[in-house]
Length: 260
Length: 303
Image 1 (cartoon, rainbow over the protein chains, first blue to last red):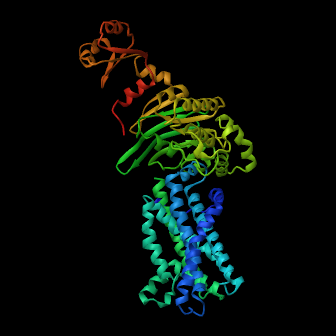
Image 2: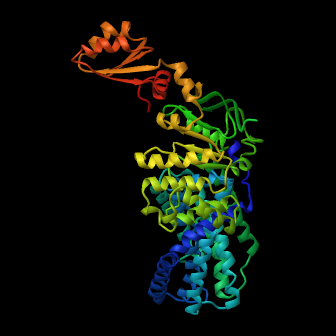
């Protein structure tokens, strides 16, 4: 299987990343507002609405609990939407990738640019949500909550890589709906975005423990709640394994799709 | 030394062989045309030359680079104008050129020095800050040509550069290409406009079903492959007339739909006969590359 040799990693991807950034910059303000509005409404609506019906969770208000979930959820979505819909446009509709492949850059460089660009979008959303968290005073230790920023980038890398796998096998935009309904939604419900995983049946907990979003939450939530995450190395490692293996798979599948 | 040499190049997809043992040599400074009907293997051949598709067998060399192993280095010296426009719709004309130039490792100073000349060459100076969706089809094509030249390439590869353009836009592209030929650039173009090939190319190759079927200068191909005169005869009774007279009046003839193509070395006796045939209309012309192409690749429709 010549397509599935390891991805070639090179800094050559930077001019392509710069291209994505310059396009984004043209519409930066509507982009950011669009990114932010949805998670903020969710956070405030559910946080105050459901939160008023509920006791504290682990000693904090439901709104605080949910804020960490929102951060993970929206960073995951930023990377997913970017690599699925926007990435697919660049690959299949606008043929931007094809134009780039005629230069000294390679498909592997393009994929790496998509990976890092998706993660950059996650980083931007993560920071935006964090600003809201700070604004509402939901964090318990400001300095510790800053560590959610690199975690947002890691979430971005992991979910960009997973999104690129879908992109590589997608016949069209409609296909992405499967990914959202069959992968993202269950992951959100099991992973602890809206309610603690510990309250669920053992089987669900076992499945949740395998999913990357669960580990993202186990890093971000303690950081917002003001303590150092337990078992940090394991959570980071599991996300990295998801990210690295997805990226390898995505590279192989995309090479097979475009370079045959 | 040749700039491009292709030896016994083949590409197989499962059961179908798209390119079959192709041999080509292109000299520096030459404008070389690759002609063939749809599905003949032109685009696949170009993709293999650029290292974007690996050949099933055969050797490709561009300059001193072996392809596909050193394709990345080779592409540093090649400019490509693809068949379909793939400009960045979110950028202006200048931003498109700048962004593309950065893919070649050019810095902003180099790009700012180069871009005005390219806009001038392609007649886009007044459009430097225009958005892509506001450009006409011809302007987009010209911008794609300018973009292909951003790295000052030695070799320019054009995949059907004027498909879908109106005559004015086509002539504008041709004049740009002629200036590049005068500058000594090597050009490899695919086309199915015979007029384009005849006007621009020093040499051409006609390929069909992945195989080379003829190669030479346009003039030599016309001289060697077809008779110098063509009389196109049409009218309701042409089929009948052809049965009786075509064999004796034409050196070679083809009947396609309602038209008889009569190829001759000397058409004077044919014309005398035709003058008395009031039911038939006819057109007398020298043979051209299209006659060569149709003779070699047939008149059946290709999809």
